[in-house]
Length: 143
Image (cartoon, rainbow, N blue to C red; front, side):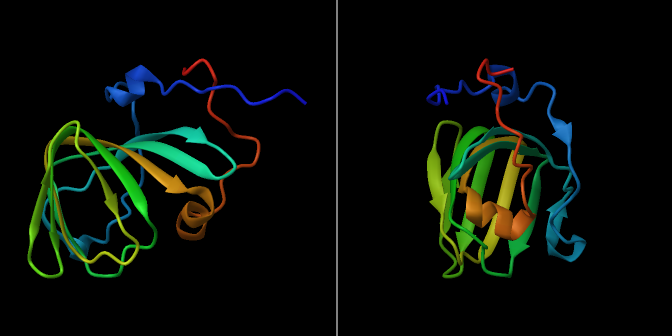
């Protein structure tokens, strides 16, 4: 069996080119303003980690149920404003990265054409979103 090789993140997908529309996952009653039209792509699916591109229209929604997993976020475009349960605003711009901890509640506001790179532990991802196909993996060429 060959050793794993590095996987380049697809530069077109990182730039938001050709992202696939996905089903809305935010309940309509949680959308406080704007519209929720998610687009994205799985960039990497490893044994322990998954990485996705997520893009959405400008929108604000309530995170009333505790966030289901730890999530690393790198803001690629637009602006993200998180208001925590204490009422403190946290602003993030392109190039900023953050951890959204499991259990977070508050307000999630995306401005502009919002796009982010997300990393989540695979087991946590599958608990929330369902099993990933075992034979699917990122193309090592980044395409």
